[in-house]
Image (cartoon, rainbow, N blue to C red; front, side, top):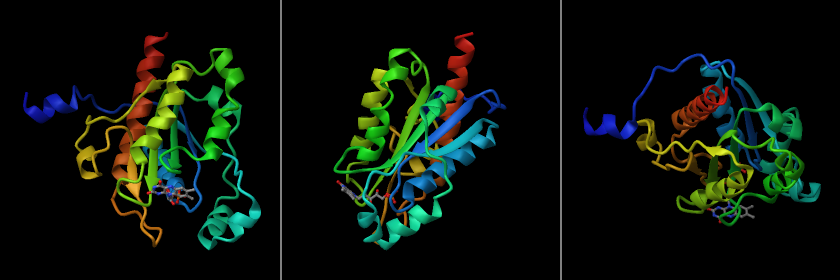
Length: 219
Ligand SMILES: Cc1cc2nc3c(=O)[nH]c(=O)nc-3n(C[C@H](O)[C@H](O)[C@H](O)COP(=O)(O)O)c2cc1C
């Protein structure tokens, strides 16, 4: 076995995982994390998982949204995306979060949603879900990793199983090599600077795969 084979682990052929339910839960002001969520959706569907893309409720005042044309346009573009509910969390075997950094943390919109999960947590309904997270920032080192880790801190409290991508696939190296989860830089023009589409799809497949391992092991 060569070095890279050892690094990437024992790969098995991707199977049909239609028994796994994946919720991709995101917050986005200007579309980047919505696009990451859509790629994760495609990755989950490629292995036949049942997938829902869900946004967390907006908290910002309409005047703030209206003052930023890109934000306003994105809100309009995604008006039909369903808002996440606590039922979606209970439904999901696997969850992928995608959020922009806000000073190295998750946005208040996502935190507010997580802060509504106390009842589910208290009843043991959040334990053993396979979870992972993705993030973006304006700078290459603007806080993406810290933002993903801020989500993982809460996931530890849920008792979720964090399915970070690590370096389990060569696609990781082509996308910037963030082992915590996909991260990307967004330029002033609103465009992503790195090509992370394949990595987002891979992260979804892996999170679904870990959910399946958990499900089988729990039977
Ligand atoms: C309040 C606020 C704080 C931010 N903090 C940072 C930061 O610390 N570092 C950084 O590189 N970008 C920062 N950004 C830029 C956002 O992360 C960037 O606009 C976002 O990743 C774009 O994602 P979206 O298109 O999904 O909204 C900040 C933006 C706002 C509004």
